[in-house]
Length: 172
Length: 196
Image (cartoon, rainbow over all chains, first blue to last red; front, side, top):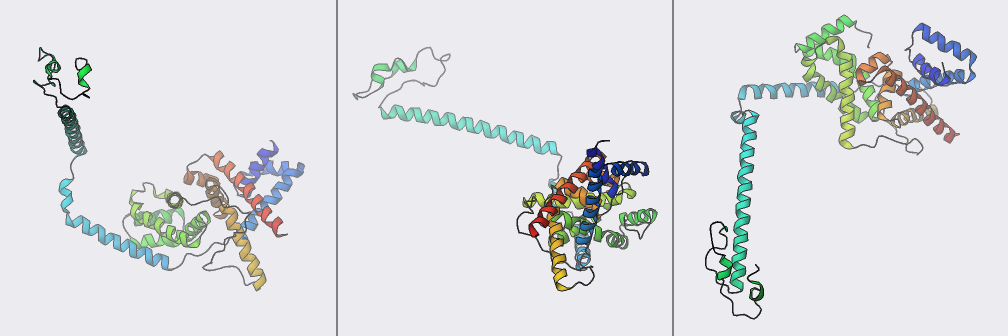
């Protein structure tokens, strides 16, 4: 066995965790190896130093009094809950019901958001048209499949010189 | 294990506590409150916190003892709860556990009852200082070394029992205790060199 391995075993020896045969092997090595012998002595001193300078303390007496009081309080609280049947027990439903409800709510919300954003875009577009005094005949939001004519071609040309639609209305 | 009761008697007490006997629970508290309190104190470093955590540990033992399937495993189960309470506390407070022994912040503790024999004032001060040094040396260890080291050296537990508490292999426990020994020795050596 290497010295490192022996020193690992020395630690176990001092903690009383070696079999007699293992302990004898360690002692035998220490008789022949001064480094491991020194390590054994150092560690033995360390163990006794630690035990003598960190005495075990008695827990304070009030600890049990507080503990028993808390146990009593808890058993009272437990009895109250058991006999009362609180109103929120009515809402204790299987998890899948809650999950379905949440999914439905999310779907509804996403549709609502989509609808709102479409309305906002429509309003913004109409406001833009108003700004440039553009008259629109027909619904420009109708799909091309439903309308054979391009509604933008029917836009009456505005009178303002800065109208951006003057030169590119047919491209929009 | 406290030597006052045999394993059979302990099993009987645990079973009665599982049936709800407060008297049996008090018997368990009387047997284990001191070692558990000192185990926690050595892990956490202060008496006040050790008191709180000991109380929390036994409160949990009281509420969970019915779930303990094998009453012969009570001791390991108890220490596991105590250890978990300490780690939860350390996590909650994000406490800095690595305390360097190089600085002069040696912690002093108001010992509740000092069992040491009467010493003259100067030796008493030195003794207390060394007690503080030991505690600081323990606190300087990484938590995974500290718990196994405390269980082996101060509680005198077998490595086999420690593996059941910390849930690690025998080789890992053995190696960690060895490393802890080296680290504690270095910490104390540094302190003593500084003093001389």
